[in-house]
Image 1 (cartoon, protein in one colour):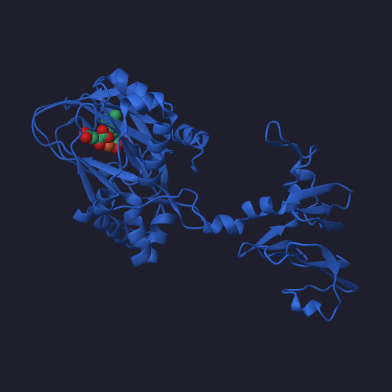
Image 2 (image 1 turned 60 degrees about the horizontal axis):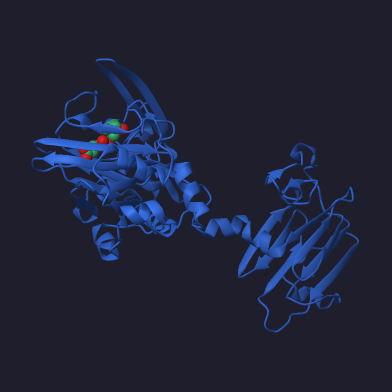
Length: 419
Ligand SMILES: C[N+](C)(C)CCCC[C@H](N)C(=O)O
Ligand SMILES: O=C(O)CCC(=O)C(=O)O
Ligand SMILES: [Fe+2]
């Protein structure tokens, strides 16, 4: 770039400033020949916003945040009619045709927008607020999914209400409240549901689509060992996530206890994100190891007609690399497969990290115990909240299903929630 344009923007109008004033403008760049400085004079009440074009990128300061936008990114994100179809919200531009070292040839601003003219004459208009909303730096400091991590006290004190079946089925506001709670806590209840498989299916359809698996669509099971898995016994089950042996574990699990004539059988719930956060606070290296090292989970079934072999590969903690936010936990010691994805000199460190996570998850203060009753349907975020159960006696019939996560989040977004 032979010409560097440096802009200092506060709400107001554009005017050139002298070279002697210019050093006051932060982070100036100069190139060989000419440096031109522009300054925006602030209206007194305005929020501070300034920006400048640097050699490689646009730097924008807005709302206390300094953001950077690479020029090839800016060209790729042109929203003009020829580059972007705003009816389908799809890109028209063929990104492979963009010169990777592209730089704007000309720049113009008004109160709200930045205009870049590219070397071929094409003009792109960005609103400053759009840029501010779509920056890496903004994404880095905000949660993808706002949440309240909980132990049993936090959850009890929050007094999260259950949804009511009648209202839930007819009123979008009730559904929205339910989904808001589900997104915040990773669990939510609907009460007053008729104790049938059909009504359970109906209630789930307000939220998402059923994810059919080798267990079927809706399942209704007892301790008859009809399938080759401990779930189909009367034994206690330690906390775990289900279908950790899928490449994409099921997003949501629904339970409805239709009948229990006996003792025990309470359901255990533990917020895995809370435990993971404890590990992050206490031993970041252990958190990092659990987030980086992929392991396998496996489901091998050979019972009567059921022959299944599933393998899922991924780390225990799945995190977004830009902010370390955990978005999915695979934790199932029953279904964890042979470890052959970790070199021998890392294996013990992995076990140490896994032990710390287990210790956190097993702390009694992190456990929420509920007795599921006919009429009370429980939705569990299977990427976040572990479930388990107490051993039991007598006939216990549990029905439910898995739901697809994408469609639940889609429902939440359609109701105006951040998901
Ligand atoms: C829920 N349902 C009874 C159908 C299946 C249970 C699957 C249990 C399996 N070990 C897992 O954790 O994925
Ligand atoms: O029996 C229960 O309460 C739950 C068993 C279980 O973990 C499952 O079905 O996924
Ligand atoms: Fe389970």
